[in-house]
Length: 73
Image (tube, rainbow, N blue to C red; front, side):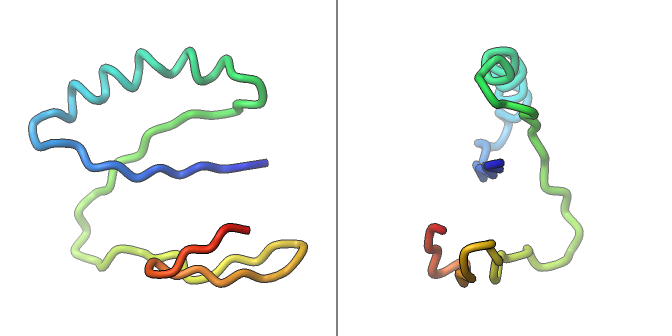
């Protein structure tokens, strides 16, 4: 399984237009072979610092990830 997380910034005042476009694209994406889910999420201000992916384990080996040095598995 491959999970893709895309981070984008929406121009201020354009969120509702983006959501409209996103929703219209969902049926096309869901029809793609192997697609299980296609869901947007929105960051909510919490006052906490943002999370960073520090490391990830794989079955083959261990690769280290940081926000400044991303390497593919």
